Structures are given as structure tokens and as C-alpha cells.
Image (cartoon, rainbow, N blue to C red; front, side):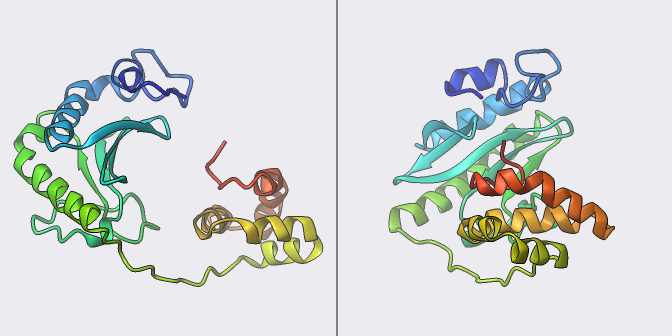
Length: 206
């Protein structure tokens, strides 16, 4: 994975075999991503690399991170629960995302057209960072699949490692297992993910 910011805008994130090839997801969105970069820097954000992606900070806090996919590219906000979204432009990353947290683009030209809106949302997020305001934590009970409960009951080492995971990582495994319709599929998945749980990783971490 990349550690130098310029590599993202010229080669990609380095997380897959398409890195530094014309097929990299960043290639078709080069102009739009650079426009987002320009807007973030113009707002006074500090540029860095987080998780192999361009991340922009203010007041010691992450404000937004950029990402590119085959079908779209996006700017995602941290602590998005605070944002008022008067323009109704924020969307959710997926069905399990708690709050709308990103602006999705499907055309490079969209960024310039939305620049005033993007800047206003960045300024709002920066204001919260300066004031030290964070969204209130919403505690949600994680309901474990029966197969995982059985595995944890019969494997003390696995149980200890699972309960040491952050709630987000625990949830990632629950989502992964619940996506399987058959009990036997969930059981086989548990065997495959055991090492990742013991390593303290989430379901999508490598």
C-alpha cells in the first residue's frame, strides 16, 4: 500500500493488483480526484495518507478521505453524524452505514460544479473539529449468529480474541456471516476467519 500522497494521484492506492496500471480505479477519475484535492487544500486542510488514501485533517482530527471505485469516486466525511446536510447531497456508503457520510460523483465535472457546497460542508466539519465537538455514541447491541455463539462457547481462545475486538470489527464479522444464507456456510466461514480474529483484525482487513 502507498505511503506517499503523490503516488495515489499518479498510480493508485496499492491495495490490489491493478495498482499503477491503466485499469486502476483512480485513472478514470484523475481530474475529479485532483479537483477534490485542490478544494480540500484550499479550505486549509492538512493533507496526509491514511489507509493508503488521501486523508485531510484539521485541528488534529480526520475530516475527509478520498476514494475511487470503478463506478464512482467520493469524498467521505468522518464524524458525519454532526453534519446538517442542507443540500441533501450526502449518501451512505452501504446498507449497514449508520449515517449518510459521503458525496458520490459519477462524472469528473461534478466536482467543480459542487465546489461551493463541498467547501461549506468542509468548513462546517472543520468548525466541529476546532470546537472539539464529536457525535454522541450510539450504543447498539450486536446480535451474534448462532453459529458464532457456538464457536465462541467451544473455543475460549477465539472467544477472548473476539471480545477484545472493537465493536466495529465485531460488527464486520457479524455482517460477513449473516450474508451467508445457509448455517453450514456460516460455520465454514468461521473456520476461515478464525486466524484474522486472533490477529485482532476486522473482516475486511488483510
